[in-house]
Length: 196
View 1 (cartoon, one colour):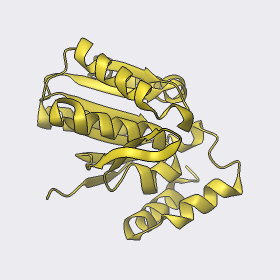
View 2: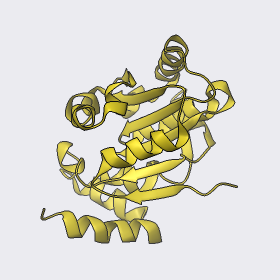
View 3: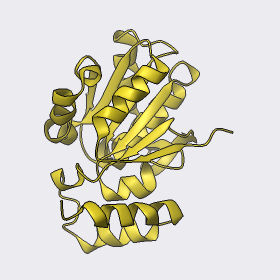
View 4: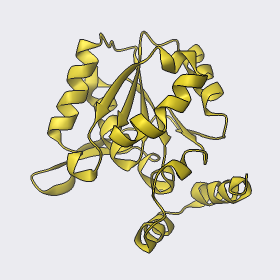
């Protein structure tokens, strides 16, 4: 069983470029939602030629859109974009993106390599790590899915400020519930760079 690699860094583009050079995928796809498409993706495109040349797949934001229709859109986009078994999918976003993107990666052509780049604190300590992937179905949350770990999870604090994730105590409490040893080391990392 493979072990998921966690990279804690604020130099995201160098790590993405290094991964693409290492695995040499036939094609690179980046999955975003409407929010990360506007707030985060432009930063990566400006700094990484590999990301700039990638095919972008956009889904609607929000847990209500973590459904079979969005999954079919991702699959169709991969097919239309010429994805092969040796392609790479980069999931750039919060829990919805990493959940559905992970499931798309796990199921397309019986599994293609995928990388998670969480953009919220909760997704960094829960959704993006541990291999939990899936979609909501028939009114049930995460009803269909699979356990399939991302090849790598790149965790950076630099994108957390782009999204309004700390507005409610509920989200902070949800984050604390999911903490484990690796997540705790990330909190120390986050605290160190919070002032920068």
